[in-house]
Amino acid sequence: MPARRVNPYRVKLLRTYTVAELAACLKVHKNTIRHWQKMGLATIDKARPVLFHGESIRQFLATLNQKRKQTCGPGQMFCLRCRAPREPALGMVDYIVRKPSSGNLRAICGTCGTVMHRSARRDDLARIMPGLTVQTVEAPLRLSGRASPSPNCDFEK
Image (cartoon, rainbow, N blue to C red; front, side, top):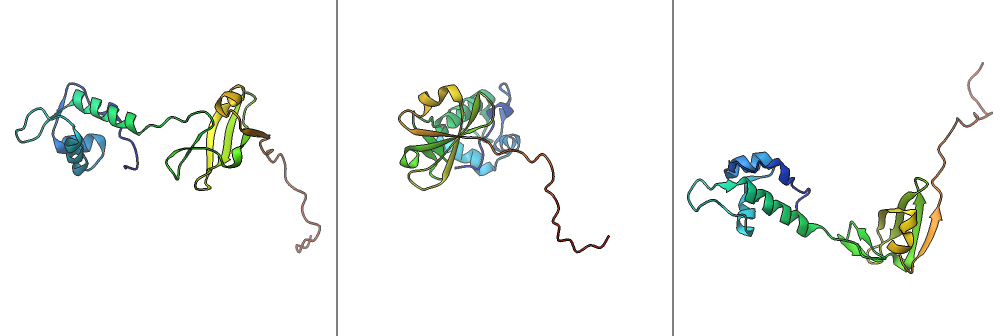
């Protein structure tokens, strides 16, 4: 699995690309393009140099990126370590208020124990996390001033 998703909109629709040009355009290695060709990226013909049409490249990358997306169902959050939607451990979720109408959900993964995060609106909490205990946690206050200095000072005045 690559470290990042490739942006299909870097490819011009009406242009043809060789393997080297396409690799430079998408900022990937030439072997990645050849791997995509084995996975089903259509070439213009079987002759050399191998040419790809921009529209077929963009369509292939869009379907490839769409396959990688996973939607979280009700009561689930996406775990980055497991790379899958998971249920929170013990059915407990913390809601951290960021704005009056929205905030972040924080829970522990029931499988691996990693902290999971999800953005949510306050009004949608019952729909997103049905049957789970949601505790509202106020955001920590910002420091508004300095603390008073220690009376035990080594500096002479």
